[in-house]
Length: 247
Image (tube, rainbow, N blue to C red; front, side, top):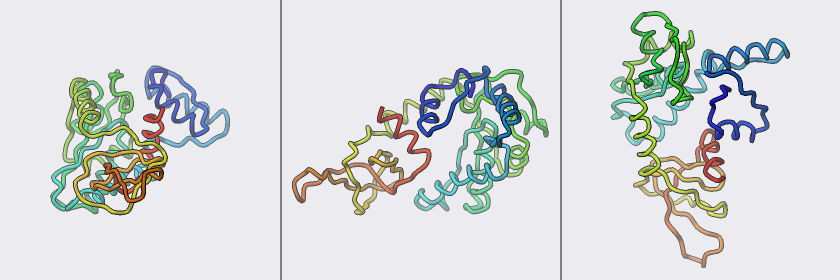
């Protein structure tokens, strides 16, 4: 990982038992070092985005969106962050193939990290001389060859955002679409009703469906229940968020 990687990412990877090597000032420098280490130690390098199987895995985000959004046939558009392009390519491929034909897919890039927008405009991959470090997860100088090929066919366009827009979006999420996690001895029931806006942590993983559920505290009196925002359990990336919020 680049030396400027946020500590939350480093800690969560270490939590899973990996050894984190911090190298270089940006993703591209870290990627080169990964290739060197893989060659010198005889291990397999797993690309973060420039591989068909990796793109297919990232495309499952599109599957989750279509499954969780009520009446997904009426969905106007899906927006996917673009760094190397794997997520946008995977989501675009899935939504365009499985979703409603009228649903559009847009990539989102920072104004100082718009390698995909420039590449699509040029008709070939363009390498940026530098990228802004604020959105570290998308700070990539050149998009992947395979993601670029897919995005040329599947994306309806690119939306560019600046740091102010990113900060405003983060603020909106934490103030209007999140709740502190309950304690681990809260459990979720199966009685689901409509109206949920907020994902919460149920002690195992984040629940992020668009429904409302009730939770029952084991030590509460029989029949007494507290309502919380919850839904179907979604494992994976949500567990990383859960670990961060529980610190």
